[in-house]
Length: 477
Length: 125
Image (cartoon, rainbow over all chains, first blue to last red; front, side, top):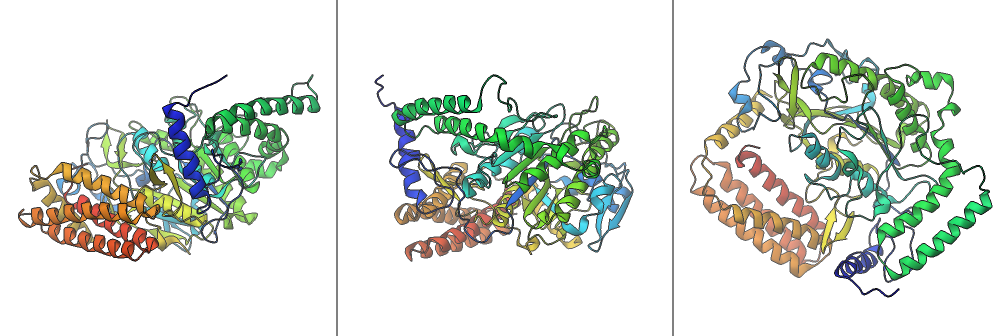
């Protein structure tokens, strides 16, 4: 079949072909199929820009946005001002009615304590995580843009307010390649009924304009996270291999006519990966290989923590096997609650959500530490934004992109508290950290310079953090 | 900490009272494009295109300096615009010297100055 070159083909060939050839000799993460050279495995391990502190990242995405004012950011002043209207002096310059009205200032109802040698404040909602504060760098002056979950989730993960850019996990996979050719390099573990990042879906783990092979692989919830892993009973292994080889020949023939078609290349590679995964993946996700004590430590077998604990333990097993980036999305099976998005009944919501994640995350930190993996893994706890110090509809809090807390633990990270919000926790005030800075810091710990990790797209050299991003040097040991 | 709160509040109060409706938004959009193009061209080590982008930024920041100098209630504006021009000049120097790593680092200073000015004077988010 003869096919003339379309405008799209030409653009793809010019942008991904010649561009990648030029970049491939210069930069990490630039090797993939192109029109002018032989196929280069896009997932082959590549040298970072400088010696890495960690090999992998476990990204704990608290979907729906918790109120860090009720978890980590203790504000005595807010307690004093409880019930009063939001003073104009604090809200000047902010468009405060993000998703509802501006009610009276609402004090936290939690009890608070300082923990560890670092003296970090943690509320009674997170007694498990509180035990590990001396391993954690709290970023208490976080800020972002947007006031809806979709927009701010996109910014957190892709540094853009609209879909189309690659997520951080995709950039990392592009930059470093895979650490284990038998498993996906970038895995997504959704939990809860929403199941896909507070309804934000695939765009937050997309490869965007990077080749499709770098996108996240979403595992299913439950005991069988990967569909169709088992070979059908009546198909012998040799028969299956022969079928795949024939399919590969057809695909390669087709690919030769459409050089630079990364979707096709990704599909071909995914067949091979699927074949290898039949051996490697069941072992990687099989939690029965863990001791009963370990499973219990993660809360597996207990209703509130079973699902999230399963994801957290799988995350540990995956990084142990070289998976670069594991994106765990929080959710719950509790009736009437999907995520941390507590516009109403925040006490009930946060009690449920905290109970869901606290024990598993504490176990994850303990387990990683005990196995020496915390030295080579970054654990990032973050959300699309925080919640307001003022109330909404009586007993909820609204979205707050202006000031909230995230935290990082693991290799090369200096524990302690960095930055702050204002006296009522509305706006980041000192040590302000934007999502670009968080991404730049994660990349640096992996040995990637956010200014040098680039990809040529539509004639422009693109970077993970766009033109922004400063490494948070104060928390890097 | 209290001093920090006061400074932030003072800036916010000023921003709220300022009328910036005569600000040249098209120019700001051109500068936004130019800074992204400059980042790309520095990454691609394209000196000619980088210098052209830097020129757009330099002109824009010079205009902003004049604008804010004539605008009561924006005392930080002229200084930030001047600071931006100095950073752009440093970037230009690095490009002319063929040191694109230094140019890339310098560009972060330009962007930080842009953000500082936006935080002080951009209309409420």
